[in-house]
Image 1 (tube, rainbow over the protein chains, first blue to last red):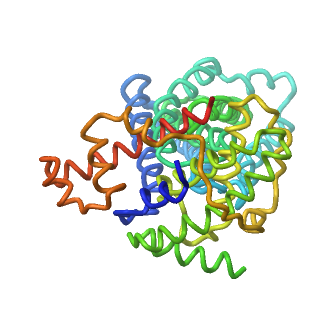
Image 2: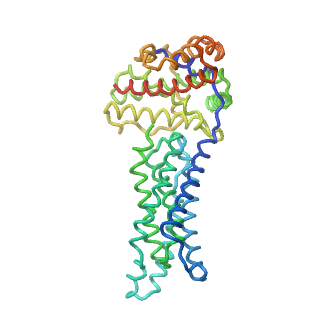
Image 3: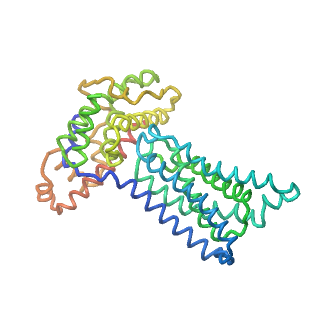
Length: 213
Length: 184
């Protein structure tokens, strides 16, 4: 085939295109994933019953502040990475900020607690549930986000997949916070932070397989 | 950056549905893509005949993925990212090491221009035969014979919207076929 012929073929009847659609798709997918995660937590796990207490409210807000800042930062970068060459434009180093913040607060709170309490503080009552629930609940938002990203054309599949996993993990942690009764910063840092990182690593591994075009 | 300026103007017009701008854009880019791929294939020890396959594959991607371009950003890095992605993909499929694809400055893609009349190893007619008939006819009439959608609809007995849909789907399948062919 001659390249000129191909060009003629491609340039007859050129339709106008909407360049913002790819970003809109990803935003809708994040909202759909968030709605699915909320439903799963509310109806399967149940919302924590002590939300009328100030202590519970304060820690719910702290957890949401952490997970939502992860979601907002990561999705800000994700919508740039879905376009070819997005990786040349921005790096997403800023996404470590919420993790750093929660780790510093956790370290301070550990340092001020007696050493004999550390194990209880770090593991809380439901660490295993948290470890299983956040990655599990993240599956639906991750699938929704990845299918929206597939409608675009990322050229750095590892980083794009990682960002999608980070957003999904953050969305899932946000929903799980409504259920979770463990109210200690070291717990949040380890089990929320850790599971979100796990989702990010899974996204990085799956990115080249799922996003290849 | 005058090349960037001119190409971006063409791209902006083409995104709004300007066929002539689209043709000029693809023609201009094909020259840059050709010289990029020629030098990169040479460096990776691949036969030069693969150049035109890659040029065409990249042109198809630039066409079908033009909605992923952000008009607020320069065009050059977008084109370069696509060209490089397709090159790495090609080298991986042909089992050559990708360690040799350097991360160039994005402007490298516009550094030179090669407009030698070029033909890929693909036989378009053969690929066409593999399309379902309605798609083949729609593409044949509108894209190759230059008929309008209405004329193609008359001649083939399809509705104009069916012709459009068949062109759209046919191009997608054709893209996939070309991509598969170049794997060999």
